[in-house]
Amino acid sequence: MRTPRKPRRSPGRPVTGVNGDARDHLLAAATELFASQGVAATTFAAIAKQAGLTPAMMHYYFKDREHLLDCVVEEKIAPLIASVWTPVAPGASPEELIRGIVGRLVAGIERMPWIPSTWMREVLNEGGLLRSRVLRKLPFDKVRLLSEAVTRAQAKGEIQADLDPVLIVFSMLGLVMMHLATAPFFAEVFHRKEPNPQAISRHITALLQHGLKPSRKTPRNRK
Amino acid sequence: MRTPRKPRRSPGRPVTGVNGDARDHLLAAATELFASQGVAATTFAAIAKQAGLTPAMMHYYFKDREHLLDCVVEEKIAPLIASVWTPVAPGASPEELIRGIVGRLVAGIERMPWIPSTWMREVLNEGGLLRSRVLRKLPFDKVRLLSEAVTRAQAKGEIQADLDPVLIVFSMLGLVMMHLATAPFFAEVFHRKEPNPQAISRHITALLQHGLKPSRKTPRNRK
Image 1: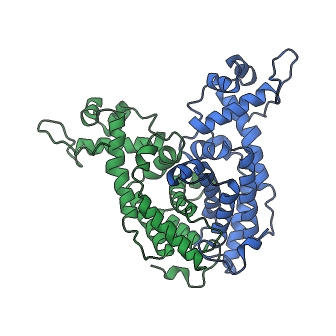
Image 2: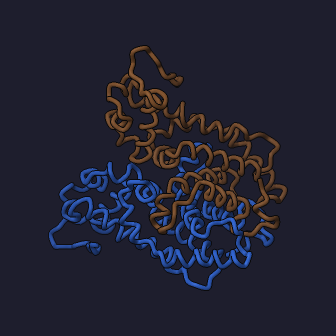
Image 3: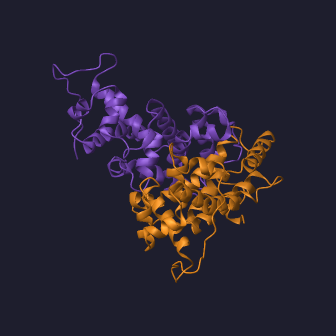
């Protein structure tokens, strides 16, 4: 597995003056295009054009598409996954764990709005072009911690038995990715304003905690 | 909008002898390929090959890709959508409506396993090639019935207030499509047997009814 290449600042290489260096601009342009049209349809030339730079610059920083995809996963997606899952530790209740994971994922996506549609197209889709790279980054030990916490709570009757303790992890992540990826579609279909990430996060957390049922405690009192 | 073409059985045109006519085989081959590789990557030649027929047969039954997509939506997707939503009527509780919709959708997908990944790629995705066609088939009056039933139940304190009565429709459909589309992925990631549609349906219904919380009544007593 390649380690991520750090931006090179060789003297004499052009950098865009405004906001960090050319390589950052190129990576940002790549992820924007991946989100809107998919990895397969995105050429080096299109990325350079989107960033206002030359194809030669793309080839200077990224050896080929495989290398570019490695960089996107190592430098963008893996850190997001880590930020979401690293705080998951034994001892917390499933509710706390889930609320934390959903909150951190939504917050991360606010910084990287290209994630949900890319995730749906390139990770969840059969034949998705980031699938095997991202799979290697999933923290299975942490997923197992959550899943085991759910199983233990089910044994004590604190979580309903009809839920699958592993599928629930997919439900949780899937709801976040799906709602955030389809927010513009939703607005288009229902002629409503696009729901903001906080509204989506509140909806998903509420759904996961109690489903349709009103809670005994006042739900808005949670942190 | 075009009306669907009925299979033509002109004398002298070849039909496959075994299981219905060539046009059905071609449509089935098309939907299989759409699910596994997407609409954009699927050529007429590939569909013919998949069906064990000639490209000329494809062009005999389908004028061009636009016409083929019209036929897939009119003859396959629209009837599924209708079967899911037509029974939705005023007066039922949101729980009954949701249980019915999830059950009928899962049952429909069992007959058409190509639906979930096609839906995620070609309907929910920005730039999906079936999006505008499918959008025209969505029964907004029925969706509104469900959404209004949720709002009324929220006013009576029977459904928690933090849920968005329109987003919940997306949550419900999204959970079904996402879990069924990613069942093979799930099995691959967690080294588990692929969950069957009944198990997925039970999990989703349980999640929507009560979230993590155990219900007061025994959950397995429902229909």
